[in-house]
Image (cartoon, rainbow over all chains, first blue to last red; front, top):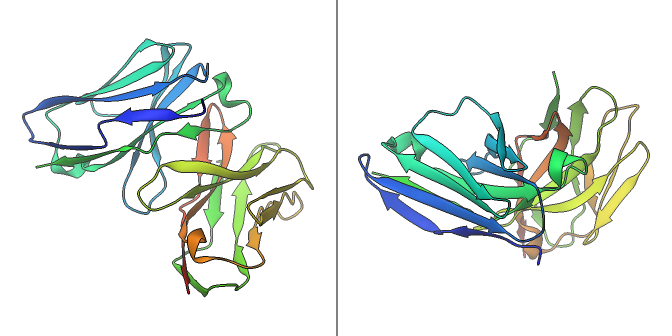
Length: 114
Length: 110
């Protein structure tokens, strides 16, 4: 199984809503990532978890809150978002430490903030 | 600092044309180099990679050679197909994360 599964595929939320994005992988990878991507732009790294501990936070606003309940799951909790947060949110996983540089990406969750 | 620079798109080609997408990098040492592809409506997937100088990565008819003298990793394909229409990203890892180029959109017309 070489898949990274993200749910939901599409999400529309108001600025006062609370929602979560979910990501799951069963490749035994110990590093998991959240990226934000605007149309036809490169993905922007948000968070990295390594061995279930947050190792990189790229100065992301606190309205985005990551959580890694176990080595296979990664969540992104969303609260009080702004319209400019509308984007494709990609989850990825890799062998710990990114030693091979290969990231396995999910298909993304497309978020629209009204 | 570490960075990746790609040729700007969009690139529009006719089917069976030759493709080159330029990529140059700056980095400490000699990192592995990657090309990722993103088809419409999908996430990114690894297309090919090279782990040391003079290595050639290849997959699905695409090739790229790691040139340390020119710090380049240009992507080539001899005969593109409509199904190759996608956005292509050059990348290298640094300090636990991937540095991506800005992406090059390829559109192949029948």
